[in-house]
Image (cartoon, rainbow, N blue to C red; front, top):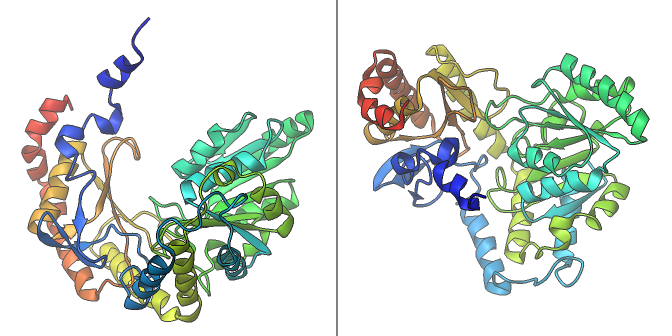
Length: 419
């Protein structure tokens, strides 16, 4: 019998194997200074395209004032205990009611974290007799939630309605045998590609199949739709999303999340979400802060307007300069390039050190081998000058990638890693 840790020490995983070359710079980097369009990285000023502060709320004086006052009044601990036992307050209820109204649902329930909460929502909604059908490109929190499911599950090809229909036919036959139901899961916005989920096409299939729809709208909440209520509102189908989940960690620049649905479903979930029943309540500093942030989403549409001014300038500029940004229909702006992981390291170092541009790098196994994805997240704090500087920098790095400069610079790293 082998020691349990032998595998872990011998095989650090597809990303972990790069730790000695990447950690502290390419992964686990330290951005410093006030959260904004420009921050410091290793002592240098950089234009920051890697912060999910879509509406630019994080460092606003009025936001910091409310956060500070809540911290001074309640501290970081209050309320203590889980909601069901001793951690329930009128402000938690108020935030739930306001979140539900904002996303056009009857009721909502707070979650401590989006990732943890989504896993638990999936677990609570289905039994071993039920069948889950979900988009193959769904976020890791959905994948992990589905892993908890003891029944059957099927994936459909990303945003492919024909594949979804085929799998719904399979799921329907199986559900007829088990006596269970069907849960379809998609995202409002897919965080890597930036594409909206095909929610309108999915709900149209309700005329033919009996299923319920669960949507994770982390990147759509606050950025899409007339009022910012998300991808469902943008596509005109918010009322047909059965269970809607959004996080406070993107547009709201905070911590926490919520799930919204009909009152009866929320009443069930609040008594059956294990990750919330057995976890400490969301601290008051975040609850009071979220109330202020949500109020600004409702009353200051100019924040979303400025965000989209920057989004359009960046995405149009990239396309005009011949860059492949895929088929994004959201603020998320991917730039696809061809190259190896060592080349990607050299490219990103050039961007940061010589051009002052900080954006996230995504490589295999998140995307196929041979591809490099640079993901840019525009915010309301960015300026058109930031966009122009970034477009100039990207033109430079594309040329160096094409002419083999990065391949030569990365040869030693590639050889050391056997690439």
